[in-house]
Length: 243
Image 1: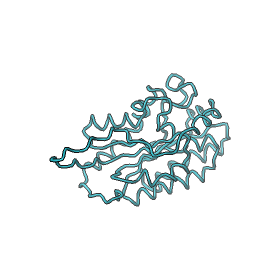
Image 2: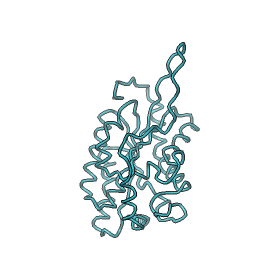
Image 3: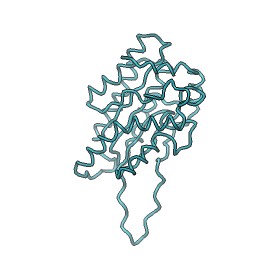
Image 4: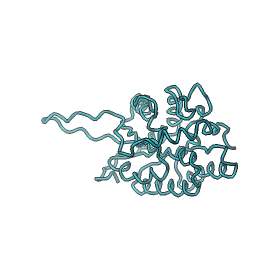
């Protein structure tokens, strides 16, 4: 059943597109502060395994301090639960699924263990064809899996003003891909946040700090079992690209 909360995208959709498009498409910094170089006489600490959140302004945390974006909140949960992972915020405002695909090589470089794919919101706002969304997300998943990186797919919904056919076809992309590639699925990234004025900024689309905490809870529910499973597996020695 399609979620009624998708109606949030109708609110100020045009102005949101313009605002999001101002984002600079550059490799974002890691959520965690880089560690200082090791003292000369001490052995170099092993690099942490990384979780990359590949997304748009919802992931980048548009309108929020960096430490209030949901990837930063995920880092707090990982640390509190004793998981030795580093979260990398690879969110770029205004990005579509095609944009995420175009910078995927950077996102997958290094000791990556999990890729959170949270793309599609801007595809929906622009009414880009659902088939293109599916093709782009498929390529992202395939390339991550080729490097033995676990994928978590976060679903989005299209605005109802583009018609029911588009709404349904867009909605079906995410569960179909999750089934095809056997990846973990969060059905709707903004579940419990979309449509709630108290949990969104004035544009009606981007979560407030309180809304971002709910988004982080949503992601954590799906992410935690992936991390727990990896913790039970033998440590894998990484190559130069994390493959």
